[in-house]
Image 1: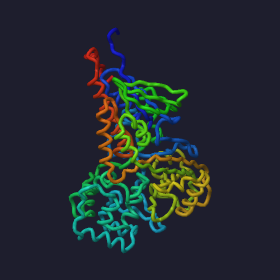
Image 2 (image 1 turned 180 degrees about the horizontal axis):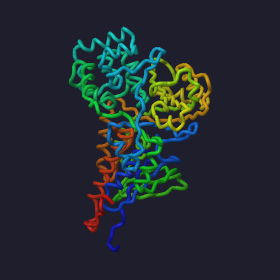
Image 3 (image 1 turned 90 degrees about the horizontal axis):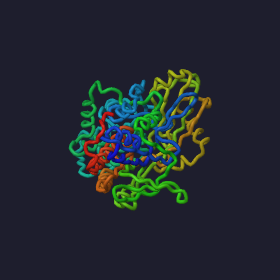
Image 4 (image 1 turned 120 degrees about the horizontal axis):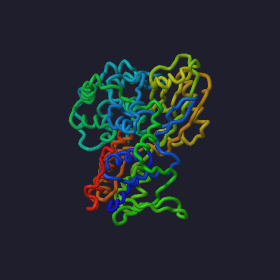
Length: 484
């Protein structure tokens, strides 16, 4: 129609779940037609969400679940038409491998910080001396924290080093693959940080947190029946975006009224112009792209460290185990000095996998923490051998798996080190004054799918507000139905 303005163009750089979610939120929130392009440098979309076949079963190669008690992840699945695919664990009983023996994760803990001293004693995760040190928390004077400190510094001061080494470290390691001596208390354990600011006894305050959880709160985790790796394609389709893979953005330049993106090698570069840009890439890539136009944000992003990890997925005949595995899996404290940091019995944890083939047990062994890159330098066969040896030692299984898969996630887990929240605030302040620019992803407010979806929604809202504020007067009244 004559006089109808051309659609505004938004480019999302990064086709992981945050970038795809941003595209979907842009589409659903737009009040007039917009063109959305997603550029992903890898051959596929989805980032750390990926599923592939092991022994005939579709098993996640990356993140296998998301928090069910944060609404953003389930809401994203619903918007992508996958809410009927959500499934929940058959068991959440997990163990700690402490002093060479599997021991039940004690009840009444929050990220490894105990509240029920009787349950902690019954678990036998700690030594008698370590248990006695925990009890001192109830009589020690306050350890008031007024600035950000490391997780280890505060928790060790209250309940001793063994809680840090044998409970907190393995639980944090499962999320960040990091070290509690470096990780920010405020960024990684906000509930504990709030306690540190106001309460005297850590264990008593954690007990109050545990007691406040509603009895009908429901499962902590959820996944999709076809794996979390099935979510990216569904989100991409629902967004209606033009998704291009194998396209690396190497330059981002501010131009009048928008942005210019330069992609591809110099000899075969492509110029793309956009009214607005969402950067949904890891901090290192975002720092490179912002170095010219937003050097302050680039410097802050460059300071975010990343850890690498690998997952060995093993499939065994169910009857190969002397005693069938029970529970969802176990965590391994770094002080045990084992290359495997966690093991998940996937077909025990997720009943839908067991139903697909009752004769198979699938195990996922995670390897690699910050500073353990030497473990991941081994070839695939060596990593399989490490995982097989771990299973033989812990479960007694003596046969070789019927199928294996090694997945490497190099530089994939951002480290929320002390001062992270301040760093993120400075990044956002520096990018907010750039019209038509927003950032989102795991580097900022959380590494899980719900947290990434939340940052994507915020980024999309910022971009839509910018587009509305810069809308040509001729377009007034030409808005589409937002439900369309």
